[in-house]
Image (cartoon, rainbow, N blue to C red; front, side, top):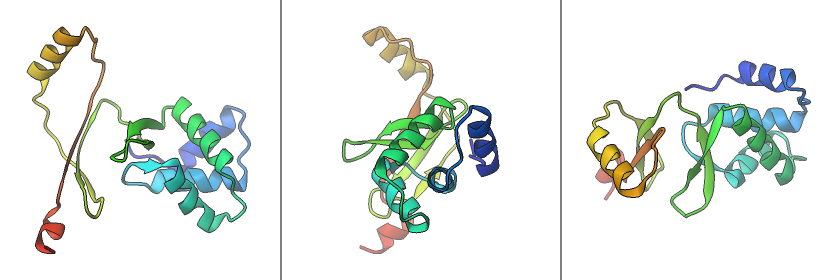
Length: 143
């Protein structure tokens, strides 16, 4: 799902949240992101346009955006928690381990695996995200 800056601003306002310069800077970073970001990543990027931004404001804004369904929490490669644009159903991504390029791909033939995992674990699987990590063609050529 593509995040729209104006739509998110409207949703925030309708929910009674003030649209401060700091909050607008965080929302702008999140809506322009094409990859998973940590709160520290969002903070660093938003601080470029809003130097007086505080890390607490970043965390609060990310929590609000998650409540609105605009973003979701994801696990990052370093074991930390990050955020990614929310998907209507599920997403499949190829992620370059060197340059962090992220490419979304279509196709999902995981039904057998999901049923088996559900049966083995007792989980009722509601949705899934598939992330395959490797080297993109450009980084492969740079060896």
